[in-house]
Image 1 (cartoon, rainbow, N blue to C red):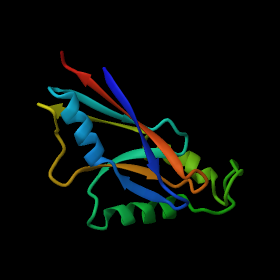
Image 2 (spheres, helix red, strand yellow; image 1 turned 135 degrees about the vertical axis):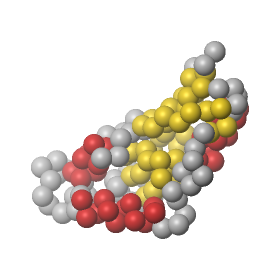
Image 3 (cartoon, rainbow, N blue to C red; image 1 turned 60 degrees about the vertical axis):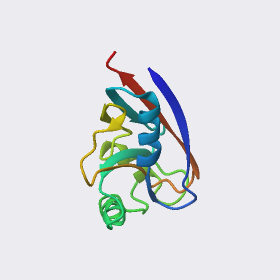
Length: 136
């Protein structure tokens, strides 16, 4: 298995950050056929396979705001207002995704991208682990 860690700087805003280019480069370097596993070692972030760049990233954040409002309803109440919702989000957008790799290329659909999703405005830097599991 080959593995690497990416650092993602999110700043202090909710974010949908495109990881597709970095994932494709890692898969290309690993070469061959296998699986790319993308994992976020954080309790408040997730990985989504979604179309990006056509407004879907903003739509996803809007949907999460509707489902998980940043208000005082959350029992997990440390950090910024509504921080507890960030701990619930990974139940909806899991902290991992696995993508097939064929001959060193991600086998994503035409409009699919790999995105890091983070509602936690308290932590401006995150890590994402990429792991390539070869079929050989």
